[in-house]
Length: 446
Image 1 (cartoon, helix red, strand yellow):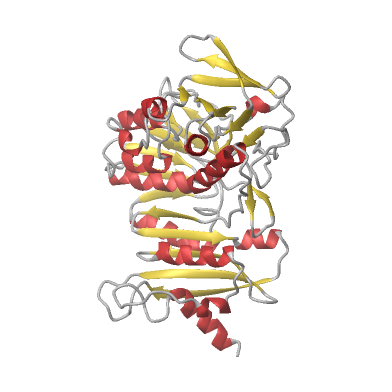
Image 2 (cartoon, rainbow, N blue to C red; image 1 turned 90 degrees about the vertical axis):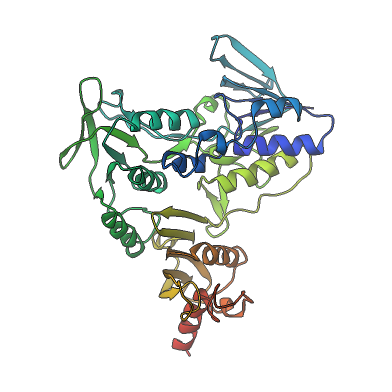
């Protein structure tokens, strides 16, 4: 059986390794457009901020290791442009030589990930305008940052804020321009406000409700023009989001969402036999919405890739879905969220209530406690948990993961009171903050 995988990062190589481990007769070919395999993109902002020494530190396995140790025909610089489901072939260009290539497959996995969105703004061709997703893009940005004083970041989501922190930490002036009314729009407004205050505290200039129109300069960017003003800058980072890298599949008949995400079933199969998809180029079944969603995260890409590998060799293991869990750091703040936001619950037309609490991460009398703000959403009729957001210092990650587990298993707000969570004064209060919130709500409704 010849397995062909398009994409050499999280989903693609997770699948390749499961095929290698579980099918001793497998022939595996991987086609990667770039020159680097299997690296942690989520660590790249911290290379810019000099918390991680080098981009090489985020590489999990080299191309040579896949070729020699795992006998995978790992190709680099191979850009796929065509997939022919009838002939079961994949074709494209070798980027260094310009030569065409064609590979036959028995089973194919599309794991091409996503690409940065760059709108049709005037001046995007100017020097000094960057996107940020790959190791080469990171190295190019680091090289230019040495000679600039002021950076403008377009976009106030995950990448925009992580980059704002790390670029500010190396001594640069930073401005963030956000088209919407708040930073991190996946958070509810009152939780997002905490991030805005932290940005101001760290002297990160934030422009909300402004839409970029163009960039100006001779050969290098000098100004950002919005619908409300013109701002001088030395460098621009565009971080407004990503889109599935699936344009090359348009003629195949593979079903996709409007944004291009490949629709897959629970076995990661597409609408065409023997073609699978996983990761940031595919859909992600949302357990709370009970429908396909698009929430591109490294954790999900690795899980889907692993399961795609099993399913490609005939071991039927379903992907059971996501609840939408994520966490990020913004200076001293930890920001965790899981489940649905108020906006998403309203879109689903679910009657709901919310409860909030401010609590400390450890026992109140133990030195070093840090506060966190917690907001939970739950269905009005039966208090079924729908989502939660937590912003604070230490301990946000623990409560986010507890809540994610509760959401996965369909628990209610009162169910949190029955959880047997760990306790000792240096680690927690006798009632965990999530349980404090549930207890207060229970007492109020007695």
